[in-house]
Image 1 (cartoon, rainbow over the protein chains, first blue to last red):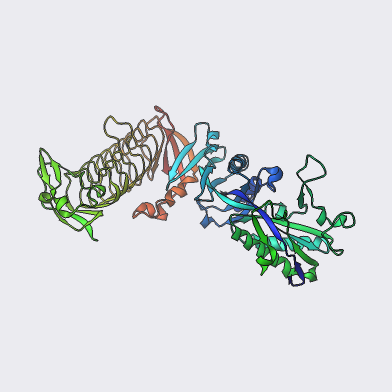
Image 2: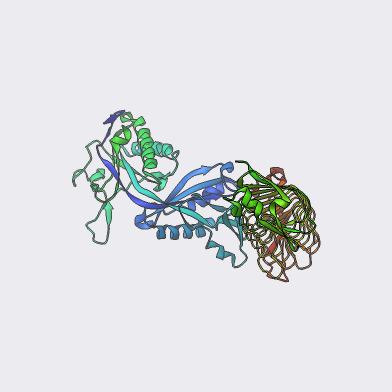
Amino acid sequence: MIINGVSIDATFAEAFPMKATRAIITAQNEKWAMISAQAMTGFATSVIACGCEGAIERVFDPSETPDGRPGVAIMIFAMGGKGLAKQLETRAGQCVLTSPTSALFSGIDGGIRIPLGKNLRYFGDGFQVSKQISGKRYWRIPVMDGEFLAEATTGQVDAIGGGNFLVLAESQPQALAACEAAIEEMRKIPNVIMPFPGGVVRSGSKVGSKYKSLGASTNDAFCPTLKGMTKTDLSPEIESVMEIVIDGLTKEDINKAMKVGIQAVCDLGAANGIKRISAGNYGGKLGPFHFHLQEIMA
Amino acid sequence: MSALTFTLKYKSAQRVDMSPLVCQHLSGMSITEISALTLQSGKLKLRVDELFTISGSDAQEIVINNSVDNLDFIGKDLDGGSITVNGDAGAYLAFGLKSGEIKVSGNAGLYAACEMKKGYLEIAGNAGDFLGAALPGNKMGMKGGTILVKGNVGERAGDHMRRGNILIEGNAGDYCGSRMTAGTIAVMGQTGRYLGYAMRRGTLLLWNQPKLSASFNDCGAHTLAFLPILFGSFKTLNSRFADASEAFNRVQRYAGDMSEMGRGEVLVKL
């Protein structure tokens, strides 16, 4: 399959079941809601070492948030419910509770309820106040700038992590420009996040390493500087490869995000140095969810 | 199916216990069976059809017409369905209400919504003393749900209240929110003396500055983030509380009652 001169590999991205949650952070203005959201989803690129994968999903208009202030929705994904709950609570406590003027609300009504402000209330040292409004419990925790308002729980749902595609280009600036274009379009799709810095990964990994202590190492088959040293997957004109990883609530959400992302890359096309789109997988034996590139773009 | 309607024929000389006439008891019964039920009135047991003309069949929707102030225990322990009272209601209206909706077009007597657990009670007129309170000697008043009173309420509204909302468009008598454990009482009109007497936790939300006891301490003026959410939850009510122009988030906060636990608050609109 070739779109606008870009070859789409007959391969698939392999993804895994995860647990996910969403929270809505509001603040006096969008600037401070964003600062808090960025802090909460910082160091959350990969479950390999961060314990979770998290990112900003989208910005909310004041009319969409529970308290009528500007807000930002963040999503966090982890391999299990226990790990997810721990990451959520720790990050909420250190990054939202501490952030000026912030408030924190549930972003998923259904699912298994996991603590959001439920345990943060103890920071109030007995001065905290509970309010049950329309069946939801909120905690008002006195802090130095006034009151921190946090909904007691949010929802945990089954989700999918690890959808991905690789952009193979003739130069590093061209690969990055294509990925930026893809991310811009993908951020418009609800229920997905691209957890890596700016949504783009330059250090895709393979399973295993020559070093026993490492479970993953550089994906040498896609490293352009190793073309003459390893069993490469790159043709001579490829000078740079970048990856976009997608976590989403459902297979359909990831499908949609991959489609608009790949389309944005292909719109730049061969004329802008984009040669191929590929995807990362483990032979289809590890992850139950397979995203076939050509099926998605058909 | 039309609403199961009880139209009062005459005002009994003695008070009448209306507790058998709730949706869950009448469900599946024929009009003949309902007619044969008896209601305690003083020393007498009166047949339902002696007091009321009965029509309709939908027991999930009960209407009481020509209601007067000696019909007690209307909607006692109601668990789903609705009761509409056209006229006044006696004492213990919505006593122990579990779920469902009760609306009264007139006034209600003492102990309305006493020990109410959930559901919705709307009183278009005034309510008597001990609205949403606990029975004498009991420690737990209203535990959930919402009460809306469009008129005034008597003394001791929300006495021993545990959870839920009491919304009063008019004035509240003395000892409003006394011995409250938690929950919210909002009063748009004036409040009487001894507001929040011995309250432990909970919120008294006021539109007008009250006369506070010395055991309430001023915590200053604040903008509170939970208030827009609280007012947002009133939007569906047929009330001035649903009016966006009545909502506010800037308040003077008083903490008390310091002679008790002192975790309660009186929030006064600024």
